[in-house]
Length: 406
Image (cartoon, rainbow, N blue to C red; front, side, top):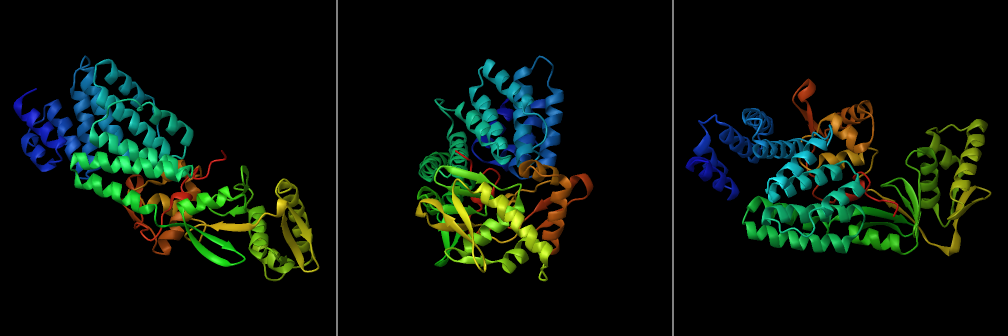
């Protein structure tokens, strides 16, 4: 490796992107292409960075396995920044194995961290945790250690292990301070600040109350019967019943919970569930059927009793009842939560993360765009979607798989 390549690599390691580019800007040999690609990625020019990294990987000879693997890892990180979440993770894991076999442990760990972050964006928490665990026991460079701790913190928050997340963020701050990189320190500071912002709203007999993420965890630990509108489920203690695929039953459960300890009128339930203000006998008959289904489903946690006016929720074991509502109203909360990270998402990546069809995502994006809440950049296959950061609250409870069963 010649002196200019060494100087450029050292400049990149120190965060001096422009200094690195000055060393290799006019060169087209494979190491220079790779360094230019990494520098362009640091400047946010991700499409250009990916092109340069692919050129570098092709230019390295078939026997230069180590260099090609490094290019693949860098390209995978660019793809993650571009929120291109499709495709198989196998090439990245093979690159990690090749790097480990050739003694490049730092880049092998970087590859595994990228894989864990990708799984986290997709809401596959168990797989993300298992992949992240592969980094345990290794001495990581400060920048990599900071990112690993931030990933561990988000994984803990998705499972509502707030103390674990807070400890991980403290370690991330220490590691980021050792790097001296202002952008990394700011990212850690933003993640720590999110812990003190409202994450949800508690709606109960006493009115509405904003809750931080640690207060949400405390509420769920009290044994209260919680109608969770963030994840469309009903939860009491260790028991959780998902209604994510039964929206009508969830609507009825929420309406009954918001009326507790009183009862909900039949006409109000019909209007809420069936979207009609002119109910007839067919609506009342259908309401009885759906209440019967909900009664059977909630049997381990509560009874639903008929009253002269309508129906009332009667939780078992004299539990209190609360509705846990998202910090923002509307059915597109999870979509806005993903877009608010500041990255530009494709509809295919959003569909993967939300486990929804692309057509469903496209319709929701069109509605949000008409309301001025998101905007599109690019055209056709290069079209990406952005939303302004939601700085007044944290969206952790709206992200995919935010509240696991265990």
